[in-house]
Amino acid sequence: MRSRRSLSSSNRRRSIRPRHAAVAGVAALAAALSACSGGGSGSGSGDDAKAEKPKVSVNLTGSQAKAGVPVTVKLATKDAKLKDVAVADAEGTKLAGKVAADGRSWTSARKAAPGTSYTVRATTDEGGEAKKAFKTAAPEQVNKVTITPGSNLKTVGVAQPLSIVFDNPVKNKAEVEKHLKVSTSNDTAGSWGWIKNYDGKDRVDWRPEEYWKSGTKVELDAQLNGVDSGAQGGWFVRDYDTAVTVGKNQVVKVNLDSKTATLTRDGESVKRVPMSAGTPGGEKASWGGTSVLMAKEGTINMRSETVGLGDAYDKMVDYSMRLTWSGMYAHAAPWNASYFGNTNHSSGCVGMSTSDASWLYGQVQVGDPFEVTGSGSKGTPDPGNGYGLWNLSWADWQAKSALKQTS
Image 1 (tube, rainbow, N blue to C red):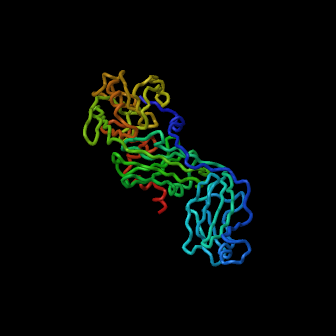
Image 2: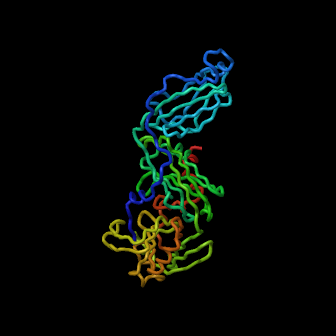
Image 3: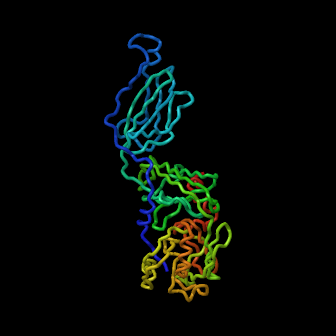
């Protein structure tokens, strides 16, 4: 039995906190340079000469400066070198940057975000100081994202990818991918891959070559503030981050031939239960291959018309574990008791007794893989239908990276 919930409610549940937000403008733009002196006024001493007012220029000026480019500060004063440059928004958040080897210029590592006011403070090795300010033009359109796992999910199973769904189209995929930083506690290698989410939106997922190792700590730093996603997409105006720990090494093995579901932990069988999967030979067949537990939804109303099966059923179903966006679940199905262990006779889901479903529901983690083998399936789900990306070979998955395609 299958049911498809609206993606919007899932997306709300999977919201992620913003790290940096674009901020409002400064009260006025500094029109002149200022200098600070370490000695007496007008004495003509050597100390005064060292504090001579430096001359600097900034590539971004005015109240409608171009966003999405690095900030460059250049020193025009002769016989002096830049000691430090600080470029900060109205909240005090600074753009990291580096002074050039010759000491004559400084360039930010991050790009200026749209609709943001910045102050620039440059100091020289001789003690001089200059200040300037500018504001970038407001974005005509803003792109937002939903990241899974979100901050409300601290522990996941070994098959859980990092997944980012974009509100608007992303044309500049390679540029966006450059700003997505993944770090792990054990240097796990992996790759981003661009796919279409089940609702048709652009999506990019990060997965290792094989399942995660239990205990791995994973962090995502999406440094998107100031990145242009391209035509019809708009600007990103904030950064995002999330962190998660990989939990128990668990796999649920569903065998369509033996009509059983077996929970394994660290490669050892924990418990095998009889089940009945989808009726072979049509739309009611179950998906094969690997799906990932997306959510433990508990008791929900399942209606056949939501998955294109007419008025076949309308039931309240207990211990519902979502495996795909298209409506494949594992759940309690006491009305199908006569088929458990001997016949696949459901509308596509993996049905069990109430007691077995209750037990499995209490054991599994979001992110646990369900590996479906045997005859009678309707193939493997697309990568964007839940987390069907594990059905692709490692080489095929790597090929979906925008950076791989442009290298």
